[in-house]
Image (cartoon, rainbow, N blue to C red; front, side):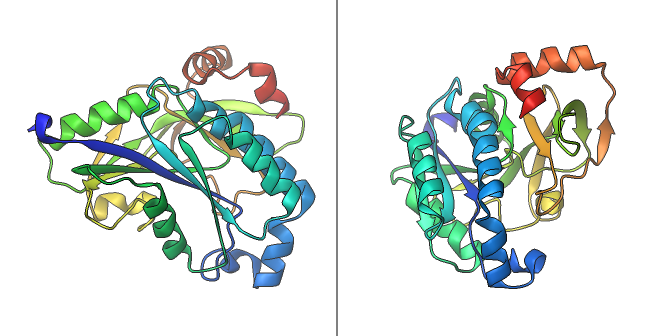
Length: 269
């Protein structure tokens, strides 16, 4: 069966996208949301985390056979939009998708459509937040797992990575790294594997409830995600599982090995 399957791996990452039915729940009204999202200090922080965690780890994947849309607001300030364009320019697998304010899920579906290509039997649709990173073998591992699971599982199904690390930036100047094994799927790198013609994606349901809707494969073999905790987490970044079981020195070694990120950068980010 595997020889008959052709996969395309595509992702959507939201970067300060304006919606009229999701983020207003956190900010009250569209004007307040716009002021908050486009605050220069906030945008500078988000750009920095995106560049050094999210983009850095995805751009250096051992398997570069994927495409990823960065979904953002078309009326984001020019200086920030230009920074995003400059960051993405050297990496052809990334697409900047700027959209007007609209319904959250509709914008996400449009971004996936803009990223997809014809001619495949199946799609591996992944999600990731702009302030999180993935291990450098994430795409390679996701491809291998998807192909193997398609031999035995009814599709669509979920692949989630529940072992990883948290970078806690809650206290300025005192960033800390913690290991974690989560009890439910996270937003970081979780993917929905489905027939290419099926119009769906992993933003359809809350990620922690995926097992209610899909067969769900949860891998804890290696640390795969690096999530940040900071005051601007819109939906929170609660740790729900086994956390802080390893010594700091071991966590540091594993993060350098899995993500290729300088420890001094993580301490000062």
